[in-house]
Image: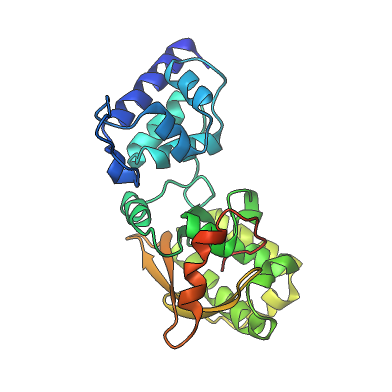
Length: 286
């Protein structure tokens, strides 16, 4: 990467950091702050980077940032789509296609997610790739940030990896499979014909999963909107929750949040998530 672009990258990061107030990203603004916007350590924290590494980026030094780090910085700094693309250009990285794990999160959804501090919430794509989770969603469903490629899609894992199904009671697997197949058909049809991401996933699932092939042949179509779910948590047992969805304008992203079902003990169990949120979990989101 050219030194001039490194310098521009550092200057761009400083300019975006300076315009954000801490409370806009869920941080506490203390009385002794010396900068109008975020501090460097706060951006590093939000992006999941070390402070030293982020300092190097702002100084125009260090190694070329990865696409994963650029995506994290774009989310931490609340960049618009154009600003996100500019960040990738400055870092000499290809701008990722919409729909993968590096997708640019809709700013409005990211803002809402930041404000949802007392309930599990996450943003996913129309192919069920988890883009970002709040801490309670990680506690409830497990950390989804480590999956790449097709494995980043929970729908793909549902039909190809038996471990993914542990999040639901076994007696509900058939119902969930039918719902996922119908939702994927709706999402794939809504995409542009030149977009091969969804069609490639469908072709792979038809080859790998007889169950999916059988369901796909039925041509059922239905977006998953508001569901009543029973989730199996490794420490809390079965939770009855309502899964609510907010779709972006183009339908490519969804904000999901989970509330306790009325008449169950799930409210108390969800309250316990704040206590066990740092423990390693094995769950997978649906």
